[in-house]
Image 1 (cartoon, rainbow, N blue to C red):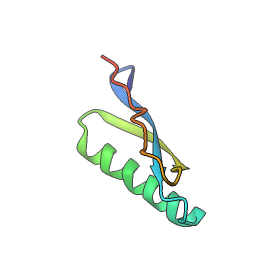
Image 2: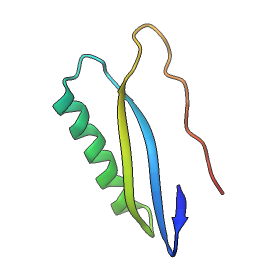
Image 3: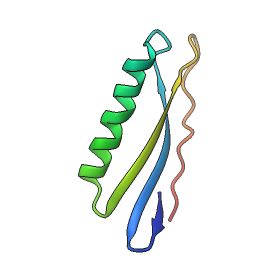
Length: 67
């Protein structure tokens, strides 16, 4: 997340089941964006990128915290 003026903006990556079709992955990303912008105070925009998770491996935590 980063501040743009007096508002927060978030960019994130989301690993989804590779068996999902594009429409399903897009819906999950859209729902995550909606949940974030309606839960986090001052967060006005969120851009979530959905990527297929790799089968047979644990999903690495690629998140980071910015203060």
